[in-house]
Image 1 (tube, one colour):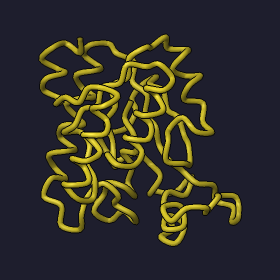
Image 2 (cartoon, one colour):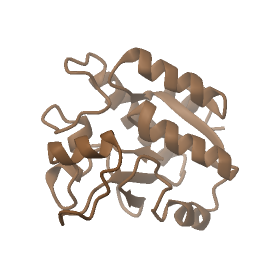
Image 3 (cartoon, one colour):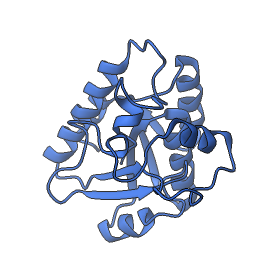
Image 4 (cartoon, one colour):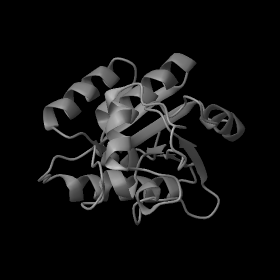
Length: 190
């Protein structure tokens, strides 16, 4: 699963840039790793699910119960149908790959992700995305609770600060595996 590889989140002109600090030196490396992961998964004929966040255009239809949600609204970010909610160039779906849209932190919450995964017949999830401490960790925890085997491609993820990224990966290692993209590709995703 590729989580939140979207313009407002990844692009230097994005409105929230959750996965990268202001002067992030790791931006290119993370995006290159994400591209290698997607290419490798496609070459191995693995189903790929792209999860993107998008909030409705209509005012008052998006719950602002938490600081993260209030900040997204204040920034005018990830509005459905606008550039910011679209996939970042080179990291979006191709052909018939699955796309799931949600508007909370956890990719499963109030979305059709669980149904789509059942349709695909998967039992093991390889997750990547931005931000590690937000959508990646929350979605990984939920997936583990649902009985999925969870693997996170650590170098295809990022958080706003390195120590936050590392802490999230530590937390994820308690419920799944944390590996590099090269390790996944070299092992044939086994």
